[in-house]
Amino acid sequence: MPKGGKRSGAGRPPGSGRYGASTRLVRVPVDLFPEISEILATRVRAEAEKRANGVPPAVASILPPPPERILLLPRMPAVDAFRVVTSSGIKAAATILDPWYRDRTGHGRSTYLTETLPLLNSASECSDHVFVWGHPEALARLMDLWSPKLQFECWITWAAPNSANRALSWRPAQQACIHLRRPTARLYAEQFLSERHQELLSQNKLQYKMTPRNVIFEEPLLTGFIRRREQQGYPAQKPVAVLDRLIRMASRPGDLILDMTAGSGTTGVASIKAGCSAILCDRSPTAMRVMRKRLGGYITGEPADLPEVLY
Image (cartoon, rainbow, N blue to C red; front, side, top):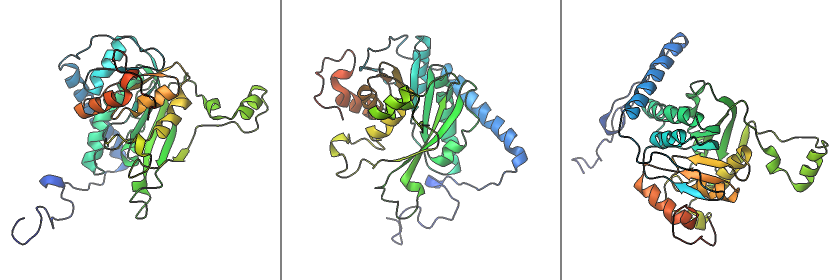
């Protein structure tokens, strides 16, 4: 430790960033919002062109996997994985986008926006529904910046009742998701009805029909002894029950789900349990290793036997 017994960076002045990167709070007039939006859009286009002129993806074309099976692409950036799917002429029912959230500072939100917008525009080319996860502050900046092929459906909030920070404030105990869809894409709310309600719906006698708007639900974080078998030791792993709701709302059994930021492979587990197939990818070697171990024989081309229970 440095002289005085203080750790490096202790007592730094307010407003200074991590690792010596200074930040400044700037108040932007409302009439400058259009110009700032154009600057951000220009930066996103420049990043997309930079990626497009980079190294071509390792796979030229692919075929969709059979129902209840997983196609695990080689490790590559998510933009390249979407390019492979689009060039192969594959259309999916839904795409899950769950990139790293970064921090909550202005720089972190700008970085999240720059990384997420190209993925969102790529997903709009091959999916009917797109679910984008992030901090509420970062997702709010995505509003009205996505592809015109998609329209806003609803804002989804996942509240974690066992969050360690919930006693301090509400915000650390929640994550947000934006649901976007093509105007012609269907929603399958009937999959959440009981058999009795489905019978009434078929007779057009159901008094209150389910709508997906303004969705707020609670599921515990995977920590400690909470759903210990489901935990894969991967950071920021979401419960299967969280993604199960999204997939069942946007697809039917036999449909295809995409996740190019798949992490621990929770989207693949939820897809299989919903009777769907999935194409997964991630640029992290750790994520690829965890997915191969977790999904086992459900991956097409893998010699491993099917696991008895899929968590």
